[in-house]
Length: 336
Image 1 (cartoon, helix red, strand yellow):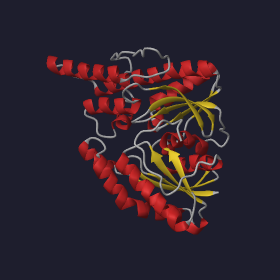
Image 2 (tube, rainbow, N blue to C red):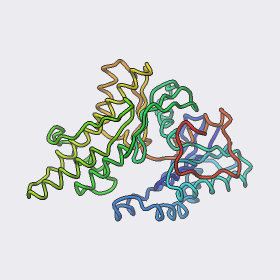
Image 3 (cartoon, rainbow, N blue to C red):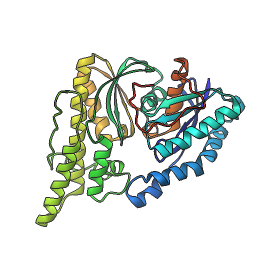
Image 4 (cartoon, helix red, strand yellow):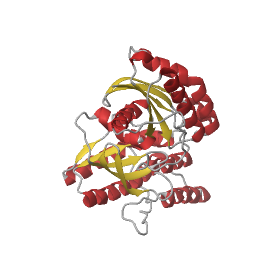
């Protein structure tokens, strides 16, 4: 089954063709990063406009790269939630237009489910059940994946997401957008013990996250140094901050593995590309005797191949949509 998948939840316009949920025939992404660098982050209105300008050409290139035409496609898939509402609407309406004009079934895909599915593309042997840590700029979740379309949320962030927190810390250090990525590159050789940051506790849950305290500590440390005329080592500060964020992610993941008894751990989302996180999760899984699955770096960020992968399993589960499908800015991963 060949699925044409569309992803436009934030600032990347993606279209891919995926066969039977595992084989990527094409995967095209039009990035807006060079433009949003000017503003230090994503500007939703600009992102939406660029999606409108790019989506037709990106779709055609995805078909060309796969050496296919629309007549060879069996279904249309699209990210419909969660994300920037204007950006989502561009993809959803484009997908509905294709579905209407071709008569092909329309498959709605939750963005976070897509991130989990990026591992199905990378690892041919991966099957549920498993524990998934989803970490991105807007989300931090621990999810018990019982089946391809059955998700049980164990823990989530109470405030900022891990990626958002690293982006803000990077901006404080004067690093360009995307902050988390540039901090990982710039601070690779820094001392992770040079600065200390609090390890937040969340009342009533051993599995939820909170990163606002770390962000506040970072702001205060830098401001106090400025007031005293002291310099901050960008490399050491960034390395210490990443280590603190990853330490919390590992601690909560370790607790969730004990709770569920899962012998497989999946890491997904944009922050799954972080070198510190990947290294520490490898240590954790080796210590516990748990199999670790991580996506290839090219599938960590937003892309349509992961949407096409998850769409295959949504289709098999009977999750299809009509032309009344709408975009939804906020939606839990365990909802359809």
